[in-house]
Image (tube, rainbow, N blue to C red; front, top):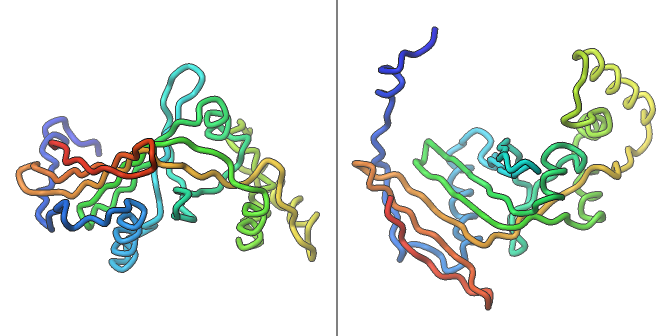
Amino acid sequence: MALSPTELAALRQEYSERGLRRSELDPDPIVQFNHWLHDAVENQLIEPNGMTLSTVDAAGQPWSRTVLLKVCDARGFTFFTNYDGAKGRQIAANPRAALTFWWGALERQVNIGGVIAKISRDESDRYFHSRPVTSQFGAWASQQSEVVSNRAVLEESYQATAKKYAGGEVPLPEFWGGYALDPATIEFWQGRRSRLHDRLRYTRQADGAWTVDRLSP
């Protein structure tokens, strides 16, 4: 049953869990992010490393989808995917992208903007072979973002891949690997009462140092 416009408009949450002060922030936004990610894990949030990746296609149309963060370090935010899928093609044409983490139970959001680049094949290979073999089969079986006539086509492709590599090592596909988003801005958002949320944004300067500004909600 669909919600009426009145019911939809009435949906709201009063945030009151905690605040966020500049003095509480680590000077390094990557360290600060990892503190918050640790909190999300400790609170047993579902898929705490799930992040919305936004890219733009050749027509200027933005697209968003959820991917999983696998590494967060000084290089940035790393995830893995099919290079030939829609997001891979969009990144190749325009590497500027954005990430959003939403941890609702903690009333927290992180928004990140920057530039994406592929990581090394060696690193992609190490991660690929750390995955369950069923996921390795899936990477080969799926022509990501391509139209398929039905589910059976996917299942048949998967079974053919599993048979081909049964008992042996599954090679890293040429079309599959990792990307790292090198952040230029990272904004930490903490929900507060009366919609007067805390927003603190790190901006990286030309010399690599980070400055922090408080933004109006």
